[in-house]
Length: 109
Length: 109
DNA sequence: AAAGTTTATCGTAATATTACGATATGGGAA
DNA sequence: TTCCCATATCGTAATATTACGATAAACTTT
Image 1 (cartoon, rainbow over the protein chains, first blue to last red):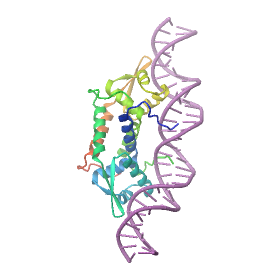
Image 2: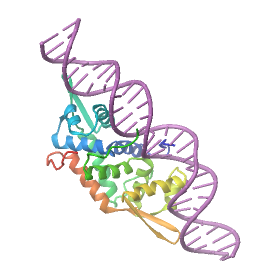
Image 3: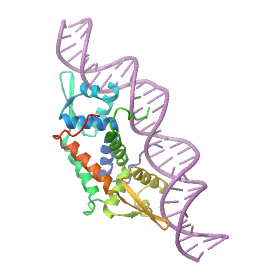
Image 4: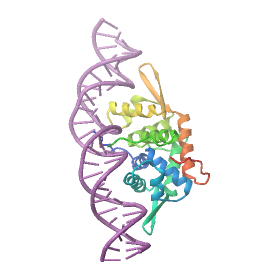
């Protein structure tokens, strides 16, 4: 199929899945590393640093923005991207909880 | 295309992408939550708790095992799955580094 | 051995993702 | 306005993913 079943899973589960799916791609990881290093980065710089076409980078940026992992602010005709700490806090917390079993904080599914 | 370019990215980047791609699916998140709660869980129990066919669950388990997020030990004709702390440590560390910009620990791409 | 269990694999159809070039859009600059 | 930027979107072809039923494989029990 290629169609992901979401019925039957909690909102938290599906939301986290969407976010982490966005992270799970080499180009997007590279972008995130860049933004982590640089705090903020113009789209054009990102394009220059990645081995991908401009349109492809733009698409990846859009995907990261869609799940609020990054945010973009346009000044003039350029757009600067930076990490969105809010969402990263959620991700970090989720990973921490999963990887430290004990507290049983999760409702199944 | 649907073909992910990996050429031009560091090994760490592509490896982390593979791992996080495996996490980025509702069914697999649900499985991971289960395992986090229960420390260890028989395949059959997981199948009962998820709204998916047995073959589908088995596929998802295989995918999580492929990237070493979980490990399975078979006793008799049942298989028990549990989280693999090694890999989770790597993931946790990566997320922590990304989400706390400052140290500039990443080589770009 | 035969039958039942449990889990993995295969075959498949439907759908999603990815990368690129081409083009559009939305500014600045001349 | 007209011409250049920078970025986003569209159209596409190639490939990947997902879910399921059917079946296989590996044990256990009878």
